[in-house]
Length: 364
Image (cartoon, rainbow, N blue to C red):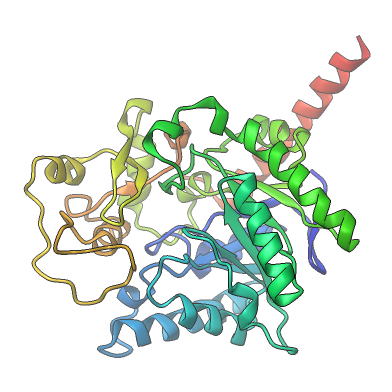
């Protein structure tokens, strides 16, 4: 696996750990991946719930919690640490400003188009900006808007396909349509990005994401033009993952039939591991009594069957009766708890085998 650059940051291992909330990827997992040469990513989603002792204000706790997680990560690694900030968050601006002020290496931003993200930078900022898109059209729009409005182009672009875990930027009828697969989308985004690279004499690496779980997946997407991959589910079942053991066991116990598309309270389809809570939602037994904070802009608790942030928080803490696990389409491949190092070493080994196999095939 070749290193690549995001701005002036050299990424030794072309693997970005996906940002997973609530409480799945914090400083523990992020620093462990960064120590192996990849990009470790802290998720901002629900941070206010994770730090209730700091104040009685969810949004203030989110700011203080992000500062704390970045501080912890920097104590554990000298590697590259990113922050995942969803555009859909009500406190998007607060999280972006905090990440930049605390000198996070990279901001990854999706769940909406981060059209104004460069506006938060100043002359002293060192944080790189990486939007997450689900189409070449979105990639082109962001490049055009950023260049025209801020004279700034993305430092990289993550292309997330329909096999990702969590909220999906696709309609239900698109999720299983091969026309929307990474194999189709990645080359399209690479072509769109090349226009801006050539015009501005820069590099904008394309990072493939969504359901990638093996070295064969990595090799296949890199052959289609991706400079790197983003992987989330594969790191859930590591010792360093910040979620509870019960949450990790849910992945290990899952079979392919357990992974399904659900309707999220935020109005988007999502991919999750089925369980008692999801069955309870479908039967109409779940209903939030009130909303203490409006953390996601598109969520209307008066019409929603449950509070998604609390459900994800409960699951991460191990209470699967009160929550559920988002997961990529191939999360069922997880078989046991490993360390991040063991997981990455295996990816490297299998990738080398894939390269050698392809080399032999080409000689024939």
